[in-house]
Image 1 (tube, rainbow, N blue to C red):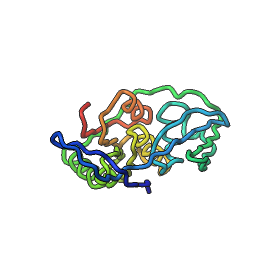
Image 2: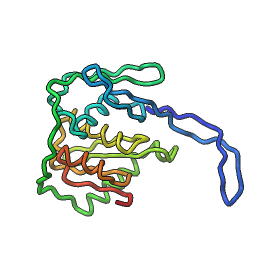
Image 3: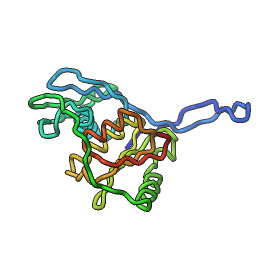
Length: 198
């Protein structure tokens, strides 16, 4: 579970300042190493870190899931270190998403309702994004301070459960940027639903 803490803030409402306390989420720096070499640092909630590494590497086109030989997560002072062992590392070429998958208006509204129900940290703090992947048989979701990390984590969870992504939808609380659309396309998710502006 994410670490929440109370901090003293100055809230401005109608040109008046009020000193009060508010809940904030503690994020952590996560350093991903590939075969011993630093690959990237990310800032996120310190949850689902193995899934973060798996989803990030796959959705960024660094390697196929089958090339990931091991993932080890360990605290490293105030950070977390994720050591990933990969076999042959070669860029994953982007394939066109070719799917007949459809989603009904009712399914979209149900997904959005569920998104709202599951946004517990957002309701407490206003400081998270939520990403879910759903299809006719399965539903998974992740909340994170970073929209990219939320998507990486939910993709990593989907790969861990062998979810059928080619017949799934990615549903998010965040605006879809080119980079988030590319993440979905790389793993062959054919439908993206967002409650935010495109």
